Amino acid sequence: MSSVRRRSTASTRPLHRLCIEAVERIIREDRFADLRIPEHSRPRIIDSYERQEPSLYGRFDFWYDGVGSPKLLEYNADTPTSLVEAAVGQWEWWRETCPEADQFNCLHERLIEQWRVIRRWASTDVLHLVCLDGSDEDRQTVTYLADTANQAGWHVQTLPIEQIGWEPRERRFVDHRNEPISTLFKLYPWEWMCQDAFAAELSRSSMLVLEPAWKQVLSHKGLLALLWEWYPDHPNLLPAFFSGPGDCAAYVRKPFWSREGANISIVNGDQVLTTAGPYDAQLSVYQQYVPLPVFERWHPVIGSWVVGDEPAGMGIREDRGLIHGNHSRFVPHFVVNDEPAARGGIGS
Image: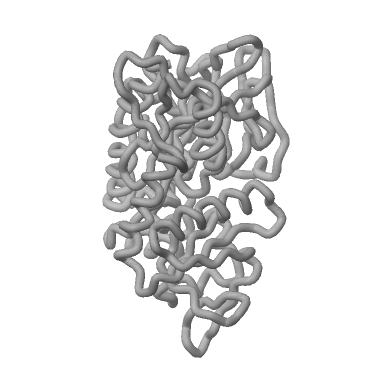
């Protein structure tokens, strides 16, 4: 497992830098149209990036067979989940079952540190954290993040995003008690926010939003095609294209915006595997298909976490099927030491 940790870290840091460069290049070369990002959303993205608004976290998903270089499947840069399992669940498992080993997991500490960094951007020490009311997983993630923010000195308020209101006279967003929202963490995608009734008010408000608007282009599946266009043959990238599969004999079709493995198609010769979902009418990106490795009939994907701009831990999700979804299971890990790993968790 130590080789997984080394390769994950060695891949995550340069890939994250590559993605930051990609944001700047999308802006400089005006490639928003390739991503079908509406014109009214572009000034917010540009302003957010030019102001270098801070980011909290993100998760790279890697294909890795234990031999070659990890390959990027996608970057969950806007609303990544499985955080509670990666930061707390597997740390508790490690502490109870194999404390003599190690674990690449400093998520908890790094989150607290990054909340302190973000605090310097805020006009008050009050932080609102929101998600959709009906999602248990999102609510658990927000509750955990609220705890890390509280440890960093924030006064936290959690509520469903449906309870946010707009006060036109003061030109500000307010919570269910009519208290102003100056800093908002939302586990709610930017592409949804840009279509909501209050979208126009986002540009009129001085509210600091996490994840920042520039993360919208990194959570877009079209990023995979742009990265391959700009950095072909990069050891951690798979060929990916906008207009079709190119010369890929087998490929995966992914909608521009999709979540939890919805509306994914794997085409491998005459074999086609497709998942259902609400995103089927969207434009797509086509990525070379590489079969996931198999361990006792389970197919793992490595989740490599970034907090701020630094690798902060890893977790493994696996599924019986080739396409991971909302019911894929989380697998904790430990490191067989041949070098010290970053140890972290709620008790460190």
